[in-house]
Amino acid sequence: MTEQQTNQNPTLNKMVGGLKRSVGERLESIILYGSAARGDYEKKTSDFNLLLVLRDLEVSSLEALSPVLRRWLRQGQPVPRLFTRELIRDAADVFPIEFLDILAGRVVLHGDDPFADLEVHPTHLRLQCERELREKIMRLREGYAESHDNSRNLKRLLTSSYTTFVALFRGCLHLLGGEVPVHNPEVVAAFCNRADIRRDPFEEVDRLKHGESVPNLKATFGRYYAALSQAVRVVDRFENPK
Image 1 (tube, rainbow, N blue to C red):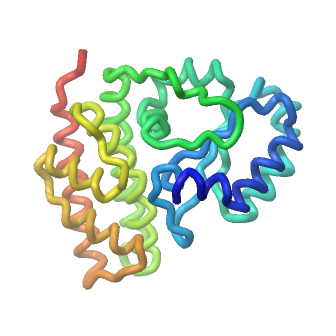
Image 2: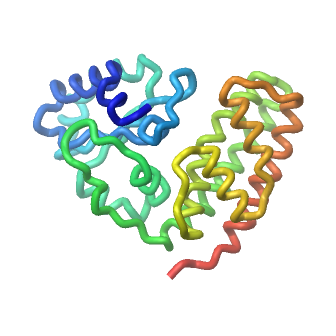
């Protein structure tokens, strides 16, 4: 999906119009990020990720958002992230991966760009990369213990975790320096190459996410889990950046 396509998309246009009517002058910016902003959008599997910048996050502003957000959620879209301009600035040390993802690909649907001058410190990024990888792998193993004997649930576990791990790999590549690819398969390939881990388990899960099948879901999970465990060990050895 190109920037022109996002600006012409009826779902997004309706949401933008609804937000303007609901919040009025308290709405400063609407930012589209994620797969649609990067050009990886697929109608069957992708969402529209929005970040709203409001003048304030007082109770009255949240209540004004409620009707349009409920309609948005009924369409199966994720809850927009709510920030003020000051909160974005103050949270850069807490959400370095998420903010780098937005910096790598975003479309301003309304207002100005609050991320234009944002900087992310590598020390904060290093800590979040390892913490998030360890936490997401913990959730993955818990999910497998629950769903290993149900192929439908196991497939959902694999495909739903894939995008999360790709976002973490993108953050890790920022730590390693050099240009970070835009599209998910290229991010995986670049990280696996730099970290010297197998990429084929991630390619199998990517095929699952795009509606293809694999011969053995459990075997795919085993390879995927092993590669992710190795990735954590690699990130753990990253030198703390200056």
